[in-house]
Length: 400
Image (tube, rainbow, N blue to C red):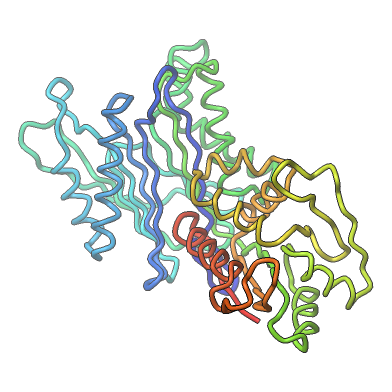
């Protein structure tokens, strides 16, 4: 994801594997290049389904990201990939299709499509027809094929929606859908969802589209179904404070930093929570129902969205972020324990600020150990890396 003062690029996707298959033949990948403040997103659809389609779409998406990382021209990249893909000897078409979206630091968007359904763009709740340039690919022994190119300037509250053909062809052959759901009906569905909930997130909109497509197939998906959504919006901010400051004279700074923060707030650690509670005479209310066998219960305080235990909870959080996919985490965040609740706030935020106290805690360190190698510091740095690289969050850390 990408941010400036008032715009942030939120990217989400959802998918449903073809009924009876173990692997998805569709691949959706996004990568942020921090040095250039640039994002590349790729959706590739492997021919057919199952493991072979999965391998081909994964190779195609990975190639696209690697070429982009080398700053190759998008047109050159698309031509190279399209002409390199193996050919189906029966159908005379490539074994994978792709859509590549390149978002620059100035929010200029370049898109190239190869045999995927045409992208859909909304400005607020208004559908936008984006000018497109069609370029023929000259390849021997293949049917005529074309690349479609788009250039677009992304503004606040714009959305770009891309999907595999499993979405637009869902419901194929059903009464009232002889040719499937169709691109135009998909546009109408998106319009209705945006009008119902103008602030719907990228992930939630993608899930709504996939859920409807699966329903079109009477809940037995006939193909891999994948949808990706890019939404330019005002950033949603989250502050996570953990640990008391190294010097007690900085307690007041920490307390007021939390109080004045404009966004959602989480405190991880009893000592940190007590500092804020004492400064502003705000009692802590423990929710015993939120405890489980491995995590202490959460608590609540006026002006703070959530209070949890510190090091153990952060360690579990880091473990979840490391081991699980975004799809898995969206299920975990429904759990009514400390980690599930923190994940709920993290996945619903764009810009995450950590303020990390470095006071020695005898419960976690031997007296000879340095604060610099403290458990809390290491955990937060690992969490920061995972949130930035794996989930494209914009993360900053302040040590006090």
